Image (tube, rainbow, N blue to C red):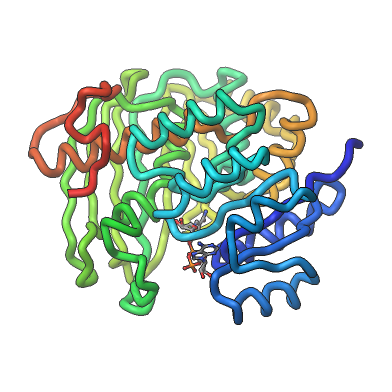
Length: 354
Ligand SMILES: NC(=O)c1ccc[n+]([C@@H]2O[C@H](COP(=O)([O-])OP(=O)(O)OC[C@H]3O[C@@H](n4cnc5c(N)ncnc54)[C@H](O)[C@@H]3O)[C@@H](O)[C@H]2O)c1
């Protein structure tokens, strides 16, 4: 095993979950330093995780010569500048979603990564749930057949307290609403299994909370593989669920509905014939579970760096997710379907913010 990756974590909101995961992977990572502009949080984090090096200054974190990776868990509007700053300091980047607020910005990040000898990994930790990984295995082993129709529901509940954080609910700082911040995970799961969409029609509204950005979305997609998909998103669901349902010629796959763990087990896979059910069973008997969630993504990140292979989530994955977001907003505002991919001359290429 090569030397552990030494990590500095910036932002102690969801950063707490990152640190727990990194510290559980003690053979691969060491969390050396933590940064937050809120001194009380910083002290609490340092004590709670036994991390001695702390700073309130992101530039100081970047300047440390004992770090291999900076893990950016700060509010969304800081991600692009801090990613560029980290690459310029010669360190790998892990960055929370969304990495950027436009296709133009993500293209700048792709270029900056290519010009550096470092790597940038956006976070999409839901990819690594065991239920979803089983479906991925069935797809890779060609058990699923042709994709017909998929449904993705992100029905969560966000009350006014959630929007008390001053950066939330605003175009300038959260960069978007439920589409950008919440449903981006479930939509990435769809793309992870089926690839990107080629056409989108969407409606978006703000109904649940008095915020600038949208909190309800309904979208109809035609995927590049020819199948159809529908997305529904709300922050007003008294019962919180996330659900994925994939209907293929060979089988129907349905996730559990735990809102924040629906890609984990259990999923149900129903074969369209006894023979296919047997193939499902024999394929899944060979499933080898790896860690899930943040831990699953970081585990694969360390392996990819060590073996010089593709990262488990790339900037190109983030780019297609941002392209879908751009298309949904454009369709909702124009009332027309939008064809993908979007060119550099698209009116929202430089940003979907109104
Ligand atoms: N992957 C996931 O499941 C997931 C879950 C929650 C949030 N997120 C993403 O993580 C990001 C942060 O969200 P959150 O809910 O943790 O927000 P938060 O407001 O709870 O935490 C952000 C932290 O960053 C700190 N901060 C602000 N400016 C900073 C700076 N310049 N340098 C260092 N620290 C700074 C704040 O003081 C705060 O402690 C967002 O982009 C969000 O979309 C992802």
